[in-house]
Amino acid sequence: MSSNKKVIFCKKCVESNQRFLGSITHNDKKSERKTLISFNDEGIDELIFMDCVATLYGRNNLKNIIFDATKEIFIPITVGGGIRNLDDAKEIFNSGADKIAINSQAIKHPEFLTELAKIYGSQSIVVSVEAKKKGDRWKAYITNGRDQTEIDVCEWVKKVETLGAGEILLTSIDNEGTAKGLDLELCQKVNDICNIPIILSGGIGNLDHIKKVKKIINVDAIAVSHMIHYNLYKIGDVKKVISND
Image (cartoon, rainbow, N blue to C red; front, side, top):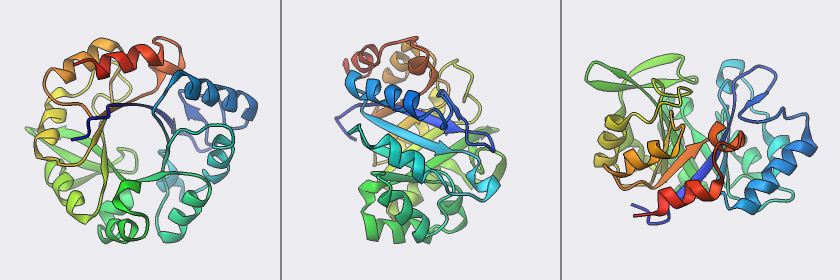
């Protein structure tokens, strides 16, 4: 596991007009850039732009947002949503993204991950895993948690590692948006079988939630949104907690 523990700000679009949660609208470019510059200055490690309804609406048009975002900041950026083929990936990388995140297309066509890894390297490929508990196991979901597959999350994580994924973005659908903490059991299960870095997401609402997961696993990275955007906590405070052993 990585020794460089990261705090990542995740911006999610869940509407047809590309309005981002935990953010201002993409049309307010001056405010957007000011926010991102402040994150850069405060030491955020990475940014994730995730268009959660891109597959639903059949779109892949975050490139202009990414291009604008990278003009004045130097934070690694991951982009996900609507990346269905090599041309989509090329367009996103050419717009300034450092990594891409794949979920639905990876499940539908696992060989796509291998193709991407061969071209861009595993370090640039993040597999987004949306997990929902069913009984005593977790199933992988696609299209932003709308559609269940019959794929076991732990088995899927092991598989994508062999296919060329360099990182896992693990999100608990059950806990996402609740601010009640991570699914600790899910985090531990996946951590026990995964040999590549994991970004933990879904439910982090305060610093105690980070402390709790650190008691059971070696945390590589966390993805947060509203607790930073709405100034509930300073980025530096979050980084201290995740880095303090």
